[in-house]
Length: 441
Image (cartoon, rainbow, N blue to C red):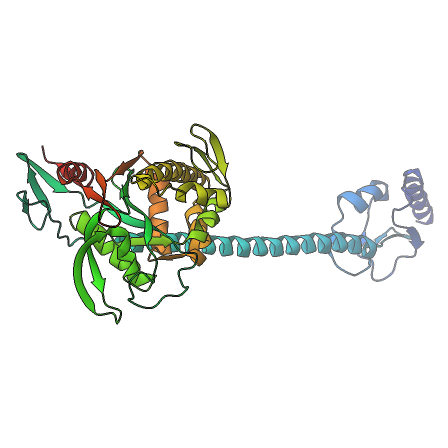
């Protein structure tokens, strides 16, 4: 028995000694078999220390404990002490590090999600605001209730919705909106204005009716002579209504406060000239505002149609600052038709100005709003952000299908004191029908 045990011990010893153990493998200790031996190995030679440690062992799954496995033989026991605490700590450290990275990733995802939701909310708010402005602007720019007149002898139906002219029937185009633009011969619209006193509010030296057909993107600019003779509503010095009188249309602005009431009175005179079509929007600009608007778009390029002042016929100019005012205002008052020549220069300037604005608006939808803000200190208008947004949206999405600049036809002559421009009604009405009506086939 003793010999057998001795032999077994030697076999196991040889087996252990024969193994090429890494310096980091658990210690191999010898001790006597105790009562707490967990397993008796009948064939010690089959014990594979390396397999036990790294292949078959499940001890590393247990936490913060040192496990000792005893493999006994008849007289002696081979005890394998596996110090799994350090291995567990390493595993736990890696697991904790992985968990920490996972937590950080979750935090970043929440931050990115919050930022994304905020940006989405701002986009929705911006789109909703623009949509509301467009809707509101459309309501303010167009009239559903119209009362359009016609020259004597021309038949109209349904308050001018239909017109019969030279055997043809025409229908009023309710997709056209009109903006009256006025240039006032004052430096400051708020300066020295006595309410309802004639000539205290200044005069409208430049009058242009901008007609925008939103159905096809066509824009027509009607240049109206300041000397055009129309019925002008008059007020007394105390502000009482004093009837109407045929006068130069520029004087309409003088019968008012130099701002809102002057604009409204001028709108009334233009509507009389244009057979009472709806004019829902007005914009007046004082002299200082010309340079401000001009420079807000980086200046305007023009070719002078005449030689006057510092400008030579046929020469190109990039107008900045006061040059713009000089180009559109200068005239030779010794000539009866001096205003007509000035209107030619104004036509050149305005066409170039509008083309520049449209090009910039296609790149930046806020350009009209920037112009609106730049002109604010020098202007009086009922043009609001809703109307501006609607018109800008039409220009960008619908495009601009050409800009025509027309002049109200007529003849100028010298009156008792001042030049008088008399409209050629027959010619003007045909022009009027082509812009504001559509022939029914």
